[in-house]
Length: 639
Image 1 (spheres, rainbow, N blue to C red):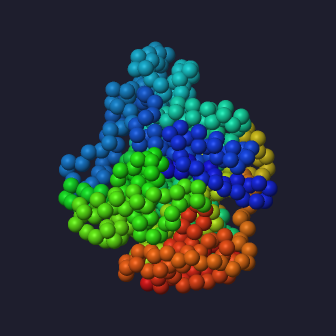
Image 2: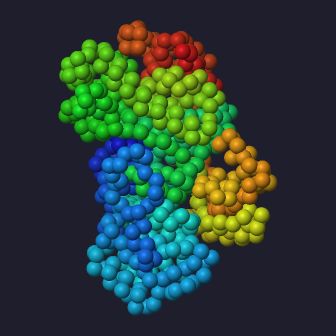
Image 3: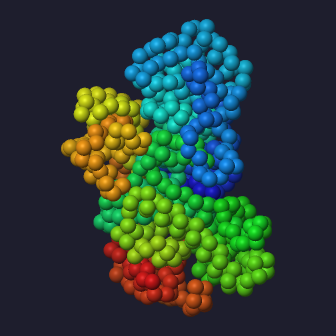
């Protein structure tokens, strides 16, 4: 299940049958989770959630104390020298999750080689513990200088704080770069009490253990996630990428841009040669999150994004969202401002209901809201509907261009995989905008992220910074990998899994000496040659003589879980109704098709509307629809 801002999506296996449902999200996410499990008769679950993300964005985490090496108490405030807006002298960063008065310095020191220069005395440990208690801490983040090389001082402080949740940097992120390591550790501590309570309550409610989706893709047991809850920060969107990877391998479409448009946001990522793309430079509200995560670009552009006038009188769409309650005006729950969904309904793209008829839409309310907006804009109603759609599509195309450009990828060599409740409605316009030649709409598009969570491997990650010349790093790399393999086998066994089923993927982050960024290279063959090829592909050049450094050693341990694919539709004759749909060239009559009735091999020219229980696909004039052998909708978008 994927708990989103507007809907909670469910996908399950009943024998070899794939079943699905969708329910409005609730203020307490567990209520929707349990209702969906009861509806499908589920016995167990894998879970993606925005609980951790929302706690950080809304500043509703625990009262946290940050402990670092004496002299570095201002680390979270100073951060890095880079500014979010280079030429804006008045730009204001959001305050750190831990205010300065909650930052303490422990008198200790470990040097850059891991040698203890100064051990903290017993009285110094007692002083820090007393200061933590005096500040009424609910959680503690400990990040001491070079503790990833020698963690003994962090362990001493942890043992001195029984009864308090403690996040230590050598366990959260055993890597160099002090600010990034400290930020990641602080976020872990900040959300730990909340995530622990949420997962414990959910486990008590369903009466059994369950899996949770992680930011880096793959799932882990809820007990494992509680030890490092920061793994959940990008939990939900990672499920869609996992499903896209499975689809790429099954359909042999190796290069995909994933486009997940839900009620609140739109998320973009890439699958290159059948592999997801990763980053260790993710951020949430400018706070670095240095753990490996699926490389996803998110924007506040969803079906629930609110349309309004800005202070200059221009039309603005998002990032503020109507959410699930009250939701768009068409939901009839008290929404007072029009949204993208209201524009899609009034423009004829959406039919009179959602969720297979279970969720009727009120077009009169949508019309009233958009007519009021049109009056304020001094535009016609049709121009206002198209304006809302154009602006939300422009916001999304900017994000899609960014994720392709920063990877050096040519959009003409990719297909746009569109899913989420709103993605297939806007995909063709978006593909035309950025030059992607075709759109794919997968099975279960409205719950594709939930499907990805269901089929994702159990995945554990290990890393350690080693920073040294590559030529002299062979031994330390081998020793780190051997240590990681041993730990992975123990951790898999602790989750009730057979370690012999584990697949281990080792890699190393490499860079040219003097660079401040790295490229992750699989640990096989000639590492130096592989790095230079990757550097040339990404940046357009690679020095043949510059020395290479090994920076961080990584290991991923995976155990596969069962996966079934929905059966493609059987050969039946589709019945086509028609309705008027507003396109850039004006209103046109579009054939309305029921997706479950489209046989494999079916082709048709746009304009078309393809409806199914949890999503609607729009095929504009000039585009061609085909149903492929897996039941995917393949659309050649034309011009």
